[in-house]
Amino acid sequence: MRKRLARLISNTLNPFVVSAVVIILLAFRETFAASEAIKWAAISLALSVLPTFIVVIFLVYSKRMDGFFSTTREERNIAYLFASGLGAIGCGLLWHLSAPEILAITFTAGLISMVLFTAINYYWKVSLHTAFVSASLTIMIIVYGTEAVWAVIFLPLVAWARIELKQHSITQVIVGSLLAALITAGIFWGFGAI
View (cartoon, rainbow, N blue to C red):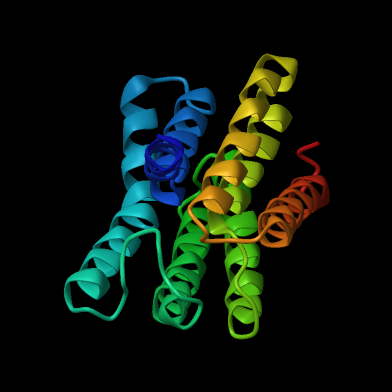
């Protein structure tokens, strides 16, 4: 039962879903018309979540990765490099296209985080699940204030799930969440968004 619950949490609150939800929420928060929000959400998803998800599907089905969310450190390198490259393109395009600033800042924080996690991954496995949840919580609290604090409950749930599934150690989930929160807060502060 514990494993089943951990798997459900891990699969539901994965980096792809968490990223998509944050992108959509920010797009609707930062635009005045639904059509604009849909446009920026679609562009942002097309520049980040969707292509990375397609690459991960390809890597899993071509047996280069053991699973979507259960991989060895070495298996993650291709996906990390692809996500970092895509993040650079997406970040540049969002700033160039004058996207809502909060989305562009979010992509900048995501790019810097992915580059750092890519470098770390060559030596040590860190939890992207907790990193994405932590960064997302940081963004939501910056943007929505105390209204978003209730969502903090997701972080210990995801951390527990990743440890229970033996995908990460306690140190790996803590480092992932702390680094992501610090980078995100630092980037938002640097752009004057805090």
